[in-house]
Length: 376
Image: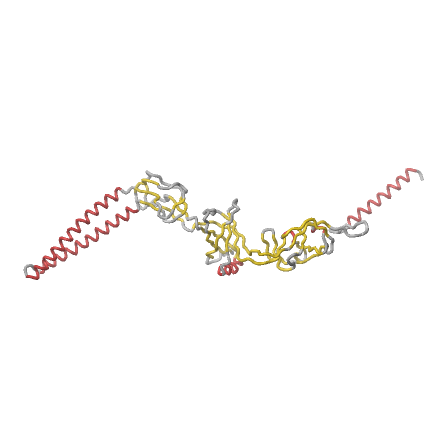
């Protein structure tokens, strides 16, 4: 055989060997573990974590809306002019603070006029009473007729009624005079004044002079599915429920207590509205804002692992448990998830080591080489 034919034969043998190796790799099942030179199983590098039993809250996450407990729109009860504004726009006010002063000159003049009329009526009433006493003495001595006595008594009653009417008119004017000073009926934050000094205001105006919203305490309203309503009602009755709310962009939590469950479930959405009262002393919650809420019903002790350790197969959820350097498939029941932590109902014990990364190369009985270990 000539030299070129030997070279072609050698190349053909090498090609057949490469094809055989490629065919072996193609039929190797996924997840098969590579064997060492002596046929020993090579350990698969994985990350692990330890299952930990600890208190875990039972909570419901939702989106809530901040609402003021009280909101008052200030309006004028008189047709008059604003004389002075006594607050800064957006400032905090206390109950009873003077906010607006209105023009009171016309009312003050009417009060003086009513006081004069009342003084006249009282003087006439006193004179009529003296006449009544005098006629009573004269009739007793036979020096006056009964008609004169009856007329004197009638005059007294008429003037007594006039005095009462004058007193009522004067009181009404004084009440109207009090309307010229608009004071804060509740504590809270006040809006910008819509009318400054010099503006004419009247009761028919649709725009309020200003609005006061009570900030502390404050309400947070949110909704939960109706299937959770029994647990929520039980937690509120046991006084174990509390609400945590956080404003977007603010890491600080605000805490409060659920105080009201709506008396009906929304038939269109299947949700029930709940309202919680927050102290909000630092005024982190602002009326009208959307907040992330966590309704904590109770706290239970449970075994927890990182959520990435839980796998899903045809028979349900499972984890790989590492015992003596070997991975074992362990079916588990996950009751709920809290952030990045899975709460295990059954299947694991406190202290078990589970695989959190590298599960694709694992099977039941495969040796592993943990790279790092972390807590749940």
